[in-house]
Length: 212
Image (cartoon, rainbow, N blue to C red; front, top):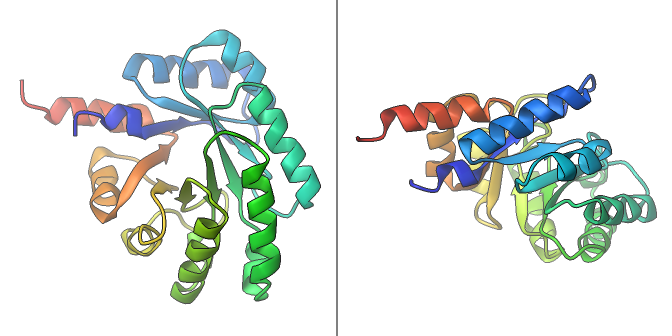
């Protein structure tokens, strides 16, 4: 897997994230050849600081914003230099069976920007039936990826959830992936990307096990 570093999004998204935290994340991304995922308020800082592929989050972490507001935030993030967006799904609408409303919302958000959109579905909160439903909805909305979790709710990425979601779109496995061994399990389950605050650890361990 020679392209592993490019498939890792090194992430800093906690509520206490500072500008220095973002700079450190970007330094790691540069050193290890990774992508970076940072809060939207730091996009101008990031684009000035380092030339790395940048993802930012929209309607994070609950996904309960009005469609017009989420579209505006997505456009702002793109204008600020985001190469990709991770948009949170409204799990409440899915749980309530409001699939058409949720689908229309996601379709509008995806169409608002010309960059790839990943939809974070909070897989640990969903049943298998709901995972299949949201997989179809996100695919029909023309999103580029399904993402397992924000990391700020219950649980994170699991092999089981990745196997289901990868039937519908490429998957970014995020939440609790902290080692190369765990990342490999996700890739084998069908993930195409990894989102992790320990991306540097994952790539370092990958480098260590590569043949000379």
